[in-house]
Image (tube, rainbow, N blue to C red; front, side, top):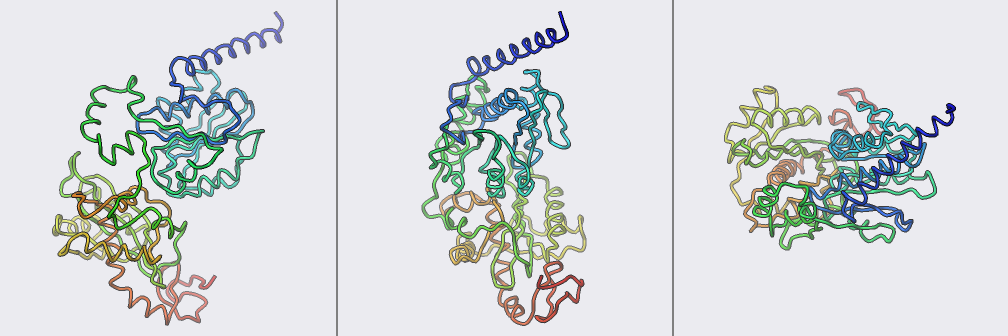
Length: 448
């Protein structure tokens, strides 16, 4: 047998292995709705389904198969964070790396760079939705967007689409638990988008029966269960102070120079596995009296951990003050913060009026177009749009946001008065004369 014949035989064996592997997935393991058709009528395959449905496996199989059968092609995987893309989409049990190993077509996986190289020259690159500008340059034949409804910056998908221009018919698969954001609603309406809907229980054969029973007992009939388990797009709640459209109308991708920034904390009473989260929200006010929600650092953690998180946010944003709601935490918040950073300016606030009374003037800012979310804050926005006076729950993120904007509103008149006489430095936020070309405090150029 010649060398050429040996190579051809080896390639034939590998091709048979790949074909057998693909047939086993598409005809034996997968449900029919998990296998995108080769029909050229769709540009985007959108899977809106509950947790545990099998979204990750379906998308990983699709992108691995297309990268394997199309040599020298370029593909993107985009997830809310780089670690999500690496740990779940690439290295997860149902991830692309394991599937390519089964195909025998994985040549190299560089986990630090987030790049997968196949034996046929194709490449799959991982991206974080936290850095949409990284998608400005690359071109792709196709890609996979995981949990699109949780992306902080909605324009991440737009940046990717502008580079989706290789091959005869570029295609994209999107897997996400549905949330009623503008981007998802628009995708569902498009004729070139094939929509698949499903629930956690569609994949019951591969999930723990005890876990499914517990999920039904705890979430059956609730709004959270309808969204997270059954994959429904839940509309706004009657009686809620905020609506999706209200928040979407004033959303921005970046904040202007801010005159003041605060970090607000709504602490959990306990720190066990069943405890509430500790709400931590960063917000600021510009010199024209507009408010900006900058970051949601909310987490479920021990008091020491959330105190460090709040202190880190204070430092990162060069904030002016930390605000703590003391009805539950008393003086504990200040004590914990002082242990982390003794120099943090702190102000305690006490809820003497009902939650609705505190929230109404903040909601009015949104109605007036004066409150803006910088990027997406999905979980915060869900609390805002779902909470009503009769809800009976304690929306930690929303509470912290309301406290932050209340603190900024209390000093609004002084800030606007100062803005009439001065300009604010975008670097250190100290006031400077209107005529100044550089900041007298830090020497940074002004008016550029």
